[in-house]
Image (tube, rainbow over the protein chains, first blue to last red):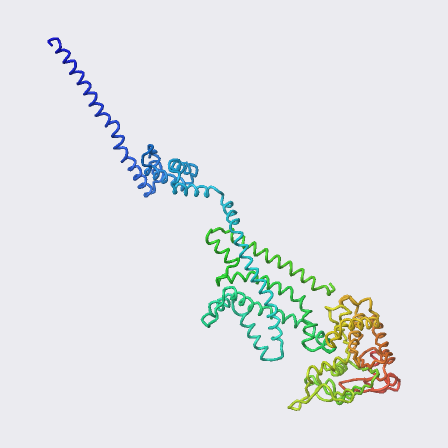
Length: 352
Length: 252
């Protein structure tokens, strides 16, 4: 036993080394790990907070640098701070038009959270921002063309029905105007005076908004047709009266000389001779009519103008209006050509 | 057949026709001459009711026609249907033709029978073709008036009037608007008609034609007849009316 005290001391010293090492490890480990762990977490939050503060005071570059310092989360760790920081960074990059870097930030997020909505939306915005403006406009035009074409169909229907109705009304009024019956002539004079002397827009408003209180409620379509029909009848009546009165008085006399009544002479001799003379001014009126149908958009009638206006308000794409203009031009051009042809055909009996 | 009694027509203060009386027998050819503004054309238009007379009477086959007296004692034209019927029996040829420009020559001639007499299309067409043949324009049947010469137009106009089968033809200076070389063809056409016995009243400045064709010549001046008689008497040396002599000296 006497020979063992040395070994006793040895054991004690070894134990102390072990304890010392252990305690050292125990002390150092928390220093190595805990500070990185416990002090690291608040650091990330602080970075985020600092970045947000910098954004608020407009220091975008500094904020960006701060946000970039936020590290990706370890697997299984909460990614909230990281995502927030990356999105903010991506937004800053987007606003400074660095689309490539911004997209990289979004993809960073999506690599970890593939369903992150905010990142996805930003990516779509980046894509839209990167497509040239004209291409976007073209896409819009393509998208809305069917809507506009459909709306032009309504415009065309309004034009065609008015074109059928107003010449009949116009002739009726014109004959009334040149009648020798004073009352009839005065009545139609008043009619023409009223409808030519007030804006078509006002007439449409009156028919659509003013008649319901009087017990007559009309759909926008019938109100539009009645307004256009009454207005254009008045204009055509004056053109027709002028054309009838421009026919040589000798024609009426020679028709009467072979025994025709006044109306036979009108129907067989005078009115047919006005056709050719009527075509240019009436053609003018009908071209004006195509454009005037745009006014009915004000009484809730969806036609080309209103449709174009609605799309324009949704897209702020000026090309939609240009597209509508082209459709209007197309319609007026076709009409112009048709009326020229008609004029030539009606003039076959003239020696020029 | 047709009788005018004391016909008066005023245009404002101007008396265009001043108490004129005239009797036209069936088959008679009467030529009216006189200076312009003497009332010749107005008289013709009164006979065709294109002009309303202010006083007088028009008798057809002894029956007063075309006018009635209203409550105020004024002379007014009869109902339009009545006037139209009378006109359809009186052919009129105008100085400026007044063909219907939107109809071919054939359609011009067919128009009266079709619209006024409501004849069948085939009948009207046959009659019109016959008449166009008679005025020598069968080959122009499908031509529009704008493509015809003045003489051709006037011949179509004559055919158009004849298509109504009128009992009398009124010619209002039918050659005055024509180029000189085209006058002949129209006069020949009227001559042919005369030979067929058509009753005619012609206002003209063609003195040779008047002399040749007329059964009776009337010289009208200031709305009155100042000569009415045989053409030979009018053109003879013995004619001593200074106004007529002055006029003839100018036109012959």
